[in-house]
Length: 320
Image (cartoon, rainbow, N blue to C red):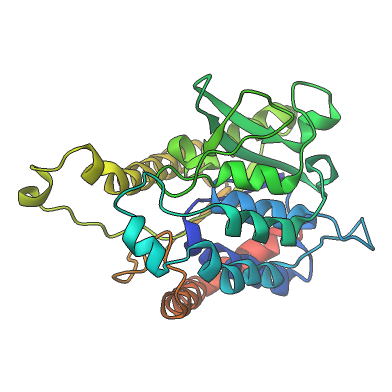
């Protein structure tokens, strides 16, 4: 049975799946790159996926980070990435994008350095979208090795392209793809688990049984009252629509995989770990305040506590 990991997008809410992955590593005593045959992540999930398959500088056969260590990306870098300075407050209603990308790119360079996509310890796929040619773009470490169409690029550039959420960050240009501009893959696959399923079917054609572990970042509790949205124009709809599209597409994928990967008598084939009711305020992708980060850590712990038995069952299955 091939084992597949899929991680949703969700900005700073990536804290939640990072905590669950840290628990899995603790219980199994193995790194994520050894437990799974394929790792797929969208947006912030793509950053996390790349972080867990990036090789160590001194020990290339071992991962650069544990899941617990990569939590530092969120807990230590979010405040700078999502800077809400006075300049931000003055200009956010003027410019289409909300944040400068410099802080994000600085953090990605700090965590990934010069590591190339081809160096991934395990097959990794990160979806993005190219806005000039209007096509879906999947950055695949496997395709670099098989010399298909993928060009070898820095992991940090893949992470930046995959997390360029519309209205939050500018699109990412990558030298290896002249004329192209990439944005967040969450526009079509914020829950990339069905993409992971399709990829697994392609690269493991002889394996009939698949185990997919899908990690959410929480369902936004965004309530839009009719008396408010009936007068909205394009600008007012921009960010609420982004949340609606992410949430709706994630639920559809969960529904599909529950049907496609029905449990066997001998083994479970699909796990979905998700916070169904985010606390008010924590649904934001870009709140890097200490208060919100602490609230997300609390939610991550609640997810672990509520799914203790299920996580134990999964860990046993992963090491079989």
